[in-house]
Image (cartoon, rainbow, N blue to C red):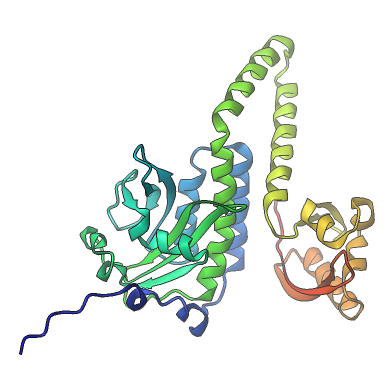
Length: 319
């Protein structure tokens, strides 16, 4: 009796539950902090290479041989497709190639509105078999601007011994926030460039000294960086060498209900749970004084009085 081979279903290749079941690798906080600083500078400067740099950072942080970003688009005949916008690695992908939304790992990710991990996805999505290297695992995350789907960011393993875990998911989720901001920024880039060119032409006529132009550019860069920081969903702050804070993003004020005047200096301590306050402040002061990385957990009071646990990561900034 002859047995026909059974087709491989989506359930056969989707192993997302393994992300939480596997032992996570140790995070590299220093490398991640350096990468976030680099991306923030690129975003603030409006560099067109930001997305390419971002996928290269994704590959490095997650020790993934290949990574990329796919953008959701609609063709002239109203068919939804994903276009490979930026890629890096060993797959041999051509940028601008498209795949159908309704038959792709990216489409599954957006349909489920959650990260997805696939094992040998080429068994189901057979067009993936034509790439230069085997796809052992593929981790795909949605890129969202509010409720609008922009596309996906993904990393790929070609090695049977390299499997993704919850630490990879955490790192890529942070990069996905940066990618979404960069995509929104690029969507408005052309008119912004036109306005900036006109302003620069006027400045060249009215401002004779290079020093004044440099100061203006610095102010614009700082304002843009502040806007970007307010888009990131984390609570961000910056401290003086003595440990007192001199800057917060808007998320801190929205979450805690503190005003900037209340939070500045050491006022942030008032938002920490009384049982955590003394130890957290001491460890933070010591880390700042010694110029060392710090990771600690403490409860922060929400504007309605409820306390929530947070993992706090602090790192020194040189220069």
